[in-house]
Image: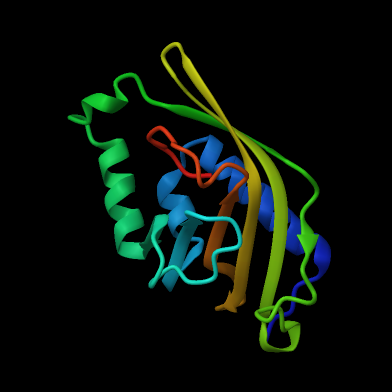
Length: 164
């Protein structure tokens, strides 16, 4: 089994943010395992995405559908396209997290962020933390779950077009 050091985990998180900002969505989807989830809780400290409502709780199929919609020529809500920018604090390795078991090829990385999404003359700023549960698959890091905890998750949010 391939093991990864802390710098490689940090580099993975930074690279993923750049892929998103450059809208290389097919490359981004390839970072996920087949059973992965992208989760954005609706309440602070939420522990269950199934029995409690979430802003988003999408599996790989739903992520692919969203990517297809974003890149579709008839998606008029994306004419012109939205753009994003991630500003990340230095990612921290979460050694106390239940998923973090390097001997099994499982890692947890938490990153504070500011995220800007813009389209035409409207710009929105979001702040929060991204928690990546990473696993080793075929000698590479893959995302098993990406959890986005927004500071204001329980407020009325406008439509989020892209991915944080």
